[in-house]
Length: 297
Image (cartoon, helix red, strand yellow):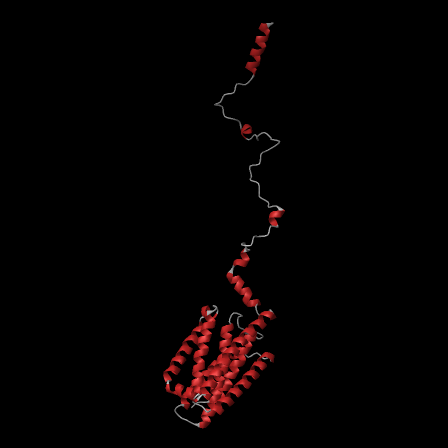
């Protein structure tokens, strides 16, 4: 029995093919797919999906959205929509007129003192260097305030510069008025007040846009300066009267344009932060109207 079992096992071993490691695999064996796995393990990383509480979470007090932290975007939105709000516009106009009223009250108070007081009038006429130095200070500070936005928008230095301009120009105007008769100064002050109020009221009510005429008026200013230069060599009473009337008319138009720029109802308007420049422009217009109506001596 054991001999027959050994013989059967030997025959099975001879019938089974011997696997030689040096023998190359057939093509069908190379292309045979790997065995199927019922539960494959995914090697791709899982994507993070925020929960609803994280999505609805409100940023803290020190955190702001990225779009709101851009200063250029904030300034563009502020410049474009500042005058659309009637409250902002009215506050801007109110602030400008308050500053302008203080300037004009101080300036014409100085004019009255220099005109009615004989002692002050004689002292001012003798000290001409105070007049020249005041004029130089006024020119330097006024030009700097007009051309440097970093100064005109920086509080409180813009108010300090405007106060220096008002003080120096008040002394200059008072000195000029001291060379005229008292009655002439009083009449000119009344005429300037009436003209200024009428132009401001007209600028607030009219629908005509004069803001685009600013360049044309600058050309007329140059012509007026040349006309006044020639009048100094060829004196004539009629020429002086024409010169004063043309100058008052020209700066009345400037006053109308500056008022429309301040009120912001036309095509061109001032930025709400330019309240110091707006007050300075209107103040200079009214003072120059007064000086041209007063005439030269």
